[in-house]
Length: 512
Image 1 (spheres, rainbow, N blue to C red):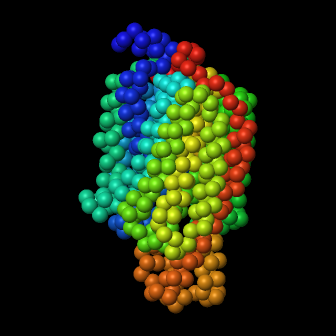
Image 2: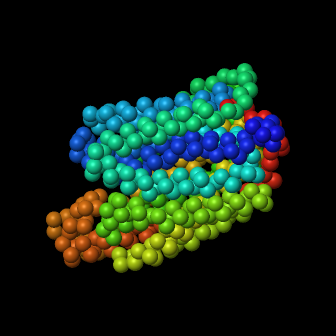
Image 3: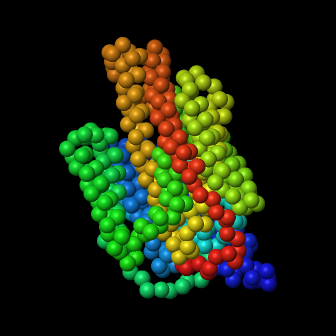
């Protein structure tokens, strides 16, 4: 190691050469979690055909989302206490065990259970990856590496559907889980060799009560959003009991955290304006971002008749948008030390993109959709990492893991709630527009609006009306997303800006 590199390491940060090695392992871990959110959807019809359990189909997705969201704050807190590297590797290990077991599933119940185990590990992969970056790269330089993570998310959004279709049509759907194993092993090897961060041991106590309450509370909310929208109705007694349970548990969690010696989410952090505003922004942005990421492919497949593989390729403009603006904003943050302007620009671009997406029609040419998709990705690229950097820069290094995982937690919560809301909008508005198109009378033979292939095989007169109704409903999904981003834009103006710290500006990191 050179003299300059030794001087850089004194502050707890790593030199550029070692950062690039660490990034390889961390990015591989992030890719595992990001890819798993998009690769399963393509294979679900084939999985259900083989394992049965069509009525439990949504749980294959919900089980992962429930455990990963609920466990995210716990991973951050534990990593602050025991060190970042060993806990990140533990998250990889749990994720790989869940992946291997999911690929061996013999019935839908086993698959749901093993997906829940995957989610436990996946919740730690995303949050801890950002925490590790906060440990090894000073805030002022973090933007230089921001584009790499935008590329990971962008690649996963395209590679997920492509790989899902390839494995399902080729060696079999079980390989969508087993492909995680070699990637995870690479991440384990790289982090073992290259991730060397000082660990400062201190007395600690895990807040098991707080962890149990937050898991129960988030479970109630996600179960309400899943069951109420699909099975029982939003105001059914069982649904209302779940939402009441969530409210009660959320209040109890705050009381417990105020008294806990080592709280999972320290309430004192909310007195930090950047932390509070940043999490509010990322929650609101999360509500809207999945509207485009999930329902744009639905439009491409259901209305324009693309296969899952082609629709994945058709989303490349969104990937380029994410990558280009993430790289640009990251470089500008590193040069200027300023970050507030980027979430504001990102929200404005997202509003414009969603407004344009709400105008798509059955005959809209793909080149127009591609432009709108690029703008949507560009808006996400401006916002995805800037908020994380701002929050990390505003808290003590000892709270790095907790603060980072909290930001990830609020974004995932926003995404979960937003997905449920947009799904309900699509369902209700589709029913409305179908009634309008067919004059209140169901077409002969009925229409299965949940089956994309069935829609494509309808006779021409009926198909035209169904596609118009489907497109109108998707337009409404994008319109409903806009107010959330408008609120995020307003919140963004309240984000306080403080100079991004450089090497030597902060004490040695706690956790490794």
